[in-house]
Length: 209
Image 1 (tube, rainbow, N blue to C red):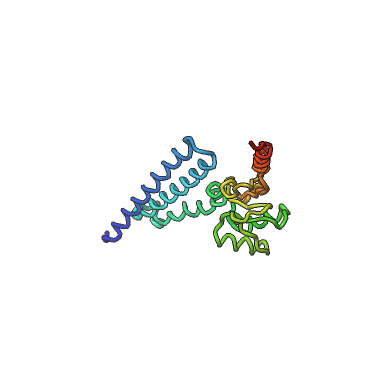
Image 2: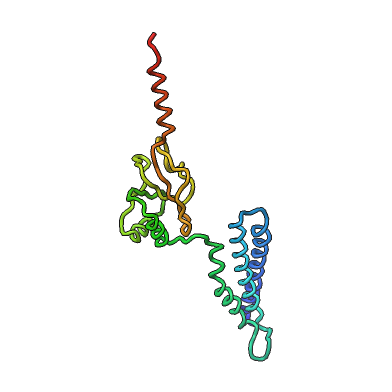
């Protein structure tokens, strides 16, 4: 056996073992023990992918073994990959539960038929320009220094970290289930204005000495 072929053989065996060990660990620990259901589903899907690649590596390493005189076992290494490719549509939703494309996000925003006063929270420049392209208009970026009443588009529920007093976010956001984004209503904080009004009232009620 040539030296290169020997090293290549052992590399295939080694990486097959690494993929298999990582797949088993993911499946047993993150896939079952004290994790949230989305994390468990993603871990099981990644574990399956790793185990399939481990099998493909081991089949490729078995170049001397033949099922018959014509078909070597190494030629069958492509079969696990082909099976995995056919199973991808079922695996991807577990790993990527939301559609990250700006086209999907724009379609969901348009379906809500909100007013034009909708602002975009922290977002990458590429996502921002793609969103504008699919909406056929330029959305305004949220400016903390000059807040305005309207709607704000956010990736998460942490609206209070973006919108600060004397403005507040509505309690229940509009959820966009396909893209995983949220739309909050931004309005003046009535509790803050009430506290300010009561404080001013107490000051006015004080009599000069």
